[in-house]
Structure formats: structure tokens, C-alpha cells
Length: 240
Ligand SMILES: [Zn+2]
Image (cartoon, rainbow, N blue to C red; front, side):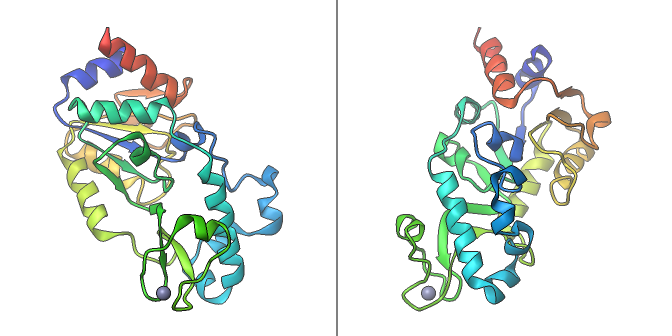
């Protein structure tokens, strides 16, 4: 933690990259976990697909209603709040996230690039009109125009939000410190960002329970401590 603190203090541009591990520490269930029985009812891989919205619409709508209800009662943890505080204090420039739960916004972070979109917005797939969360969760899954309502996340088969993506690339290239929190960095485009940061001379810090393909490139790798604890301890050292 001391090393991370020193790096943070000496860096002029720090970018944080968060993945699923950040959210699971809030208690957000992994929707792929077989123990939850979701697999018995749904096939998430099939349903997180643009085709499902067209060919398997009833199940698609039911699946996302279920997931939104999952997220509703869960909130950001201390780690999310510390990142928001660090942004206000100028310690970090922004957050690039794979997560769609909106917890960084909820915690007060402002410069957040959600490269896979967000569950915070719901809109009609046909006419684009924004829709109400509560009504959706209660079962109003169609727009007044008759179109299906969908979450503002990126489905397989759809392109990533280009503006957000470009912004994420830009901020990453400026970083002299790039901190990965809870991502296995095993898939594209997630793995693109640490690569980009490194090519531009940034130090890499990786906090993840499992090894990642970038560990050998990192200045500092933390596997044995959770993200929340890493951030809390680092914050404590910073403020002492
Ligand atoms: Zn509509």
C-alpha cells in the first residue's frame, strides 16, 4: 500500500480502470454464478445479445427486469467513495469502467467513462425515448410506441459507445499512473487500456484476486487484499 501511495502522490495524471471485482465487493451477485439458479431459467450469454432483443423478446425483457431488481438494493462501497474523493482532490483524473451498475456515479465520481454503457438509463429500442426505472421493474417493459424497453448497456452485436471510448483512450494515453481494480484484463477491449497506458510510459498497478496477463508489466501487483481494503488503507496513509 505504501508503494501505491507513493506512486499516487508522485503521479500527475492517474487513471483508474475498474471491472467486475469492484462491484462484487458491493455484494452485486455475479449473474453468471450457477448457484443462483439464474442459469436454470436464463442463458445470460444468449440474452445479452442484440439478436435476443429481436427474436427472444419476452425472455430478454424478463431477464433484464430481473437484473435491474438485483442492482436496485445494492449500493457503492467505501472504495467507490474514496475514488470520488480522490477525483475531487485532484489525485485521479477519471475512471474508465467495464461495470454497468452506475456505482461510480452514485458515489459522486464525475469523470466516469462507462465503456459498456449503463443500467442507469433505460430507453425504447425502437424510438429511443428514455423510460422510467420503477415502472420497468414493475413490469412495464414496453414503450407507449409498442417498442421493447432496454437497458443502456452494450449488448453483444452492438458497437461500443464511440464518444466514451475515444475519451477513455485519450485519458489513458495521458496517464503516468494507471490503476486496475478488479479486472482480469483477459478480453478485448479491457486489455487494450493497460497496454495503451504502458506504451505511453505509465506505471501500472493491478489489484485483482486472480493473476492477469499484465502482471509482469506492472510496477505493483496486489492479489491478497480486496479492492475496498486496498483503497481504504491507501487513503489512510495518504491522509496521515
Ligand atoms: Zn418507443
